[in-house]
Length: 234
Image (cartoon, rainbow, N blue to C red; front, side, top):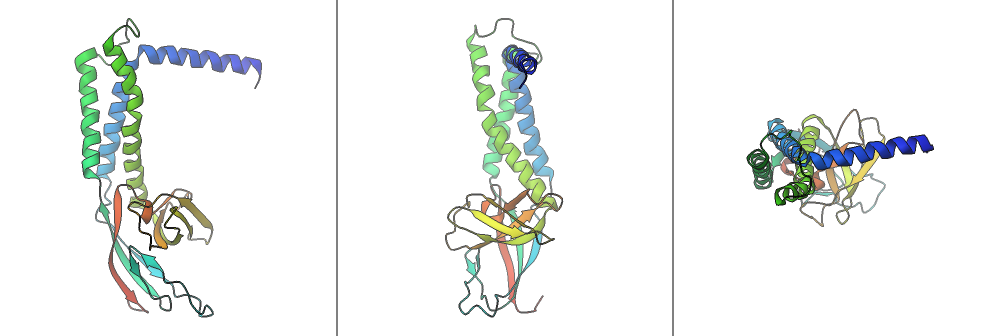
């Protein structure tokens, strides 16, 4: 990096730090508003009633003792093709309600203690009130990350394509092929763990298959098997 670039980056960073110190209440207010927005926006995405269907192909006849695929603790005969129907249920409403309530409380705290949230502090670091807002800036990143996880998980499920993936139940690592036959994968610790599961349903973006999530690693949703039929039955 050139010296001039280093100087510019350093000056901008210094100004940003001083601005952040002066507008710490503003940052708390904006982070709280963003958290609340993500919770509400995710709630408006219609995913809870979604159902999906997948075909689990039969194993290669050349394999003498194929492994029995297991999904949601249900095993399937590997010698037959299975048509699976599932539903998506939402979970974690209590956690989301707590996150939204906390965001509202922080917004109210800023308005009650500081008044105009866009007003800078005249004396940085000299009051207990300022220290509280300074700590809240860092604390708020936890609920904000959860709210973002909720929103982006909902958005992915609402518009995703489906695939059957192989799953390592211990690490949460999974692999799948998209509609073009290209291999993708990821790792997400199963929630809750199901040691017997060795396959999963993968939800992925058709435009960007790298944006994907396995049914075993969903944080705010769970997959429920509704029906499974063997052979060529619908």
